[in-house]
Amino acid sequence: MSALVVVGAQWGDEGKGKVVDLYAPYADLVVRYAGGANAGHTLVVDGEKLILHLIPSGILHERAKCVVGQGTVIDPAVFLKEIEALNERGVTTQSRLLVSPRAHVVLPHHKLIDTLREKKSNAAIGTTKRGIGPCYEDKVARRGIRMGDLLDAERLRSKVEANLECWRPVAEDLGSGLPSANEIVGEYAELGETLAAYIGDATALVSASIRADENILLEGAQGTMLDIDNGTYPFVTSSNAVAGGACAGAGIGPTQIRRAIGIAKAYATRVGGGPFPTELHNEPGQQLRDAGAEYGSTTGRPRRCGWLDLVALRHAVAVNGLDELAITKLDVLSAVPQLEICVAYELDGVRLRYPPYERIDAAQPVYETLEGWSEDISSCRARNELPPAAQRYLARIEREVDCQVGVISVGPDREDTAELRNPFDA
Image (tube, rainbow, N blue to C red; front, top):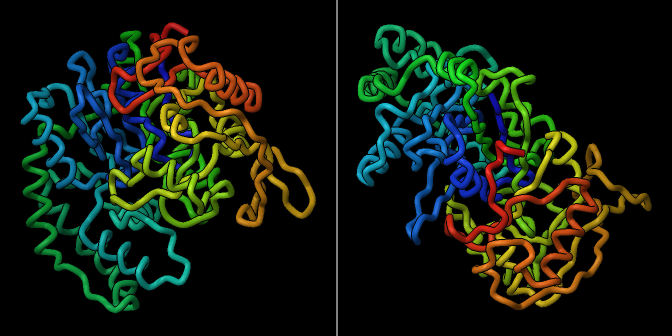
């Protein structure tokens, strides 16, 4: 058995979908273990784009079975829409896709509360307004509705009625009412009936895969700097996006994970509020945004763009125990003649190699200038085919964060990749 976890090593949007899609042909089982429809994992195959919010990015490869684990939160309508879109493309889902009955359900009032809070708050976090935070609140408060509850209308009604009573004072404080229990139960019981064939014992399937000595690919969502415990709190997501989250979210023991691979862009982006030390508010920032098409796949919002932050990346290597990095969007840097790279922060006269506990927004990035390149690198299929300046850029990343670079993405399409090899053979 070889279990491999793939995580975002920045603030999300690193290209995890593409990398998981590249690794999936080598996997028997792909498990999405955290987050919800706030994720947008983009796959581009032969120029055709597909965005997955909940279903694992390995679904296009017929050999792999796919699981959505108990660490996720599910919007059943989004899940069903993705299944229908895949079926229309001729992708088999019925016998290959399973969602855990323990995964919690995003309800209409979760999305309502999420939206109202963002509008009213003077310190908005910049959520996707998909109801993810309120759903995780219910989970931790032990009052959540889970996917298995959708299969029993009586149990569903009882739980929804109790859940609404807990949220009613919050909604009233935000100046709103709540949907009726009848409305929610009617819609979600019907969704449960439609999705019944996809709801099953995911933990048993993962355990069987382990016993069969199969290759398991664990797919994270969001990124390390958005992790609830290890990120830029409180501007974070509501789940553990780091590699350790795969254990609880997928139902797999820590001794069964063999390797961890972190995905990082060749520069940095962030969506929503929160500190972002290397953010660019000038022409180079707009160049990165335009060249990289940096607009959220889930929200459509323009992403904040900045130079590569090696302080944040060192932190990601440490808290995830990364064995390797996959660098994406290296081709975007061909549009920028001179590169800056953040090697440290300076805060109150002290030079820092790792992010401070707080006041990251006050930290000043310490930059070093590197030579850029202008060549089109989209046809490069090996590291030694890259321009010398691009090779030196990658080598500097490896040296600074003490982690080797494996896969190098040089374009959006599946084929636009250098140094791809079987990740389970390492």
